[in-house]
Image 1 (cartoon, helix red, strand yellow):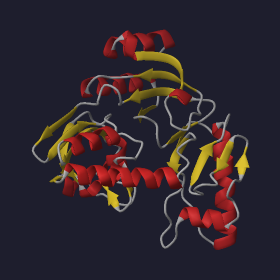
Image 2 (cartoon, rainbow, N blue to C red; image 1 turned 90 degrees about the horizontal axis):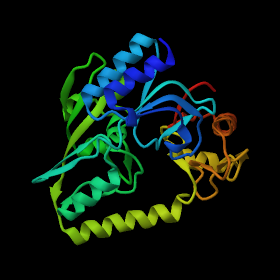
Image 3 (cartoon, one colour; image 1 turned 60 degrees about the vertical axis):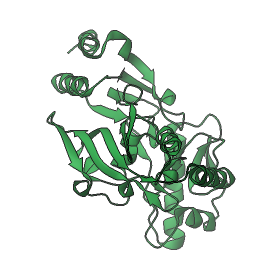
Image 4 (tube, rainbow, N blue to C red; image 1 turned 180 degrees about the vertical axis):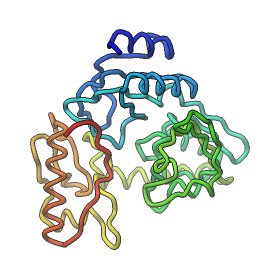
Length: 304
């Protein structure tokens, strides 16, 4: 299928304004690196998502779902396929008693503030996580002793076969940075969160306390993808990296943060290759020094 025909079919599904060719992925990841995707499509609903997938299937094109790109590094060569942006058109948030229902593209920070405004507690831990609800549910995101599995009541997903299903919490198979969504390649459409009545001022105080701790300990002033490595059992990745003498270690514009060694930052002008090479060297040195294999928490997309 020719490029013009692929574009025409994608535009027929999502609208011409919602399809961009050769879109730099550095604009859509918090690390601010990454080359162009062949097609960047912003569908409006699950029907359009599935229709785009069918076009990809017919054209032999790979596709990949992106939220706000907070846990993603895309190759400098970009992505030879279709990026499905389940983000800006999936941000609706509604409150019903102690439940909040939100679209997959809603930012955790926005949901947390609405919870606070409605005197609902339980989501404070997520108020500073720079990701969308869809990504957070897929990987069971967590911070400061809280994780998504504690508050998720039900999740609406789109299966690879095009079926929209509602999964109850006990069907989600939540684990450390994983879930059935990740394992079965489902796409999160929305989720229902169950919170508890609380005191608005106390909720705000807790959110502010966690924000202060983040500002103090994390390099929020630089582009990054959050924690670069998963927590190895019995260890902390940041401490292992620091004890290996790698604070401030850099490759090109990518650097191990001196403020928090668990973060790899874009100090300025970093490429995706810089990030990959730096993380590979960190893995090698930590393995050599402590016999611990660090697993990336960041997802890599494209050819490296």
